[in-house]
Amino acid sequence: MYIEYIKNSRIIAGFTKKRGGVSRGSFSSLNLGRNTQDPFISDNIRIFLEYIKWDKDYLFLKQIHSSKVLDLDEYLDKNNVNIKDIDFKLEYDGIITTKRGVLLFITVADCGNLVFYNKDFSIIGALHAGWRGTSTGIIENITDLFIKKGYSISDINVYVGPMITGKNYEVGEEFYNFFDKKFLEKKAGKLFLHLDKVILEKLEKLGYKNIYNKIKDVYEEKEKFYSYRRDKITGRNAAFIGLY
Image 1 (tube, one colour):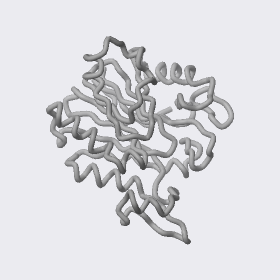
Image 2: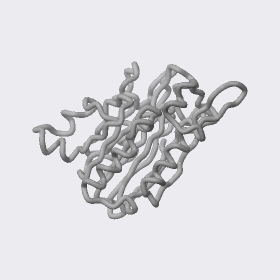
Image 3: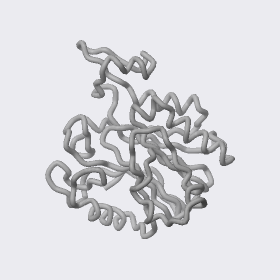
Image 4: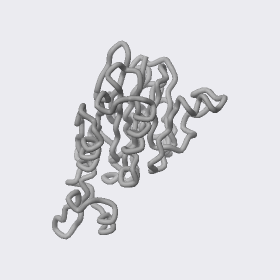
């Protein structure tokens, strides 16, 4: 049902696969995309949480393809709310927290996705890194938040999950305005973006020492992953991470 990144008594993290839920048709079957017109999302969330034996809070962001990163601890301190009050209501594309008992979800169907945790399992983060967010600094922004909170980037582990790769990510000529030409490849008169390579290079330049490359091309693995570019009407996989 999912690709396991890490699981022990203090943390769980991974990336969901396409099978194991109850969604039908184009959304079949473990669709976790709450922005999709699928009446079975709540059932799929329940099925997945039961499968991983998570009985605590969970939080989805209302992703908007931005570079905004939420400091959940700070938000909860400033606002008299609980996790259920803000689930799928806050417009951000990244999040960090030291709070235990909250499973963070980032949903994708081609885009880059990252989860972060430090070596003593005291802080975690999750990131939706589409081309817009990546080009406008979302990876830099979450890094700045970690540093602001006193964490050393060299002590933080990061997993980069399944996403579309340059082989299948066709873009327009305007992308030369957003990315270094070394990440853009011309083939048979078409232009392709290696967003996966952009993400990996950014992480290295920012000082991350423990980068785990779990990239698989979701466009090519139809039985395992959703892809908007491939199918147009489709569900969403999810990167997830939580502290026990």
